[in-house]
Length: 589
Image: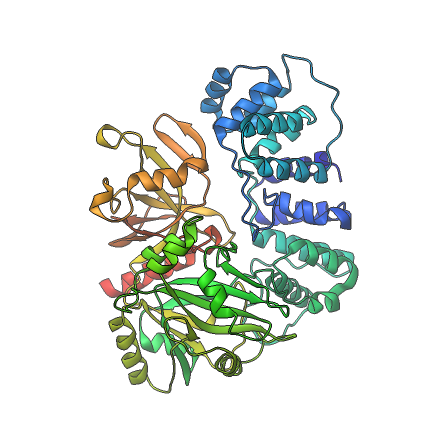
């Protein structure tokens, strides 16, 4: 498939904010995509050149992109920077400059989507002496073979800032619409997929929606789902299964602060587990004994946790496990806060030393695959029995998560207090008869914490500091996720971070270093950032506000900690904010 066809679709998608129109445009595009190009097109629709679980980074900064545009267009870097500051869109600047090139270039050849993926992946492999110059030449070569419109989107993809407003849900709905049309069924627009707890499906459209969503959840591969829907229909979609070695999105819990409300959601008797202050780890062990570890961000962290790999060697069966890795003090044996153990996620060297300083205990709380069979659809109580059968109980190393079957509110209250006293965040409550739903926030799994005065948010903007904070990013703009998968702003924070390392805690300097590669545009002191770094913030209350795109503002938000284990797509939602706002109003009456 020609890249120009995809760029025409990009342009149309960027010109509408209506989700149904975007869905129809992508559905129309899918009709033109050959099976052999589906994987590339699906990645490029999300502005990616590697699957989500591949930790390879392109590592292209806006400064490097400007140098490459200068090389391809013959224009000075100074003029490119000036135009960039005016428009805030380096892709648009590139398009304008290449439409009136100042120097002759070699005859260009038509780019395919495979050419684009291949060229960009080549950039990510360039290392060592002279790597910057070679990366520049590779980018310039792509631009010289591109039309001005193609160059606009090439630069945006390189900077991971596609700006066409496409979320996972839109792509899912487009696959459904395309499949329905192909198989001669009436398209019934729907804003949301059927809820997990809905019983049965009433229409063919609902049946297809459920089948596509389930297949995406199981495979984490929208290209495979699209091709299967095209050729094999419903039965093919239902035949898509989990694959050991390919991470899936973990099941997410809803929030509650009161025991009665939590039990209403999950029913009684209920399974209770500690909500550990660790990080989610998905463990894959194949039948040959190969072990792969993923975070909930779908990042491969096998190399960072050789101790966990050794623990899993004691599990003698092929499996996919959902776990919590919890740090503990090797001297006292007491659990430590997530912020300490999160260092191990980012560490690429001195692993053995850090492993001794910051050991982890792996608490296994669910199993999705066992031997040659997926088991995630079995009732939780059956899955728990499997865990107890195959997982060694070795505190300080690996063990089944602490569990209590509760029949009354008093038992939940007692377990809750016990968990908090042990230094945990709270408890999890689960429906005994419920299946595991990858990627869903469902009513049969609830997390209960003392108060809902904190949110996981993503940083989308900042300001360069002045005076003693000069050279640091400060006053961070934060966002949550709306129902369409868009990041909507909800406030700014500037407190909670430290100026000096000796003060203890995360510093402005550290956060600035993390964000520098995510800078998309600058205007004066203001900086626009790629939504990538997730943080936890606390706040006093939520207010209605027209100043932010969410319609709400956090009053006195304060930084608590970095959340390395959270993907931007897993942060708090606008629905969470609205629930907290309503609960707050109820408390204030």
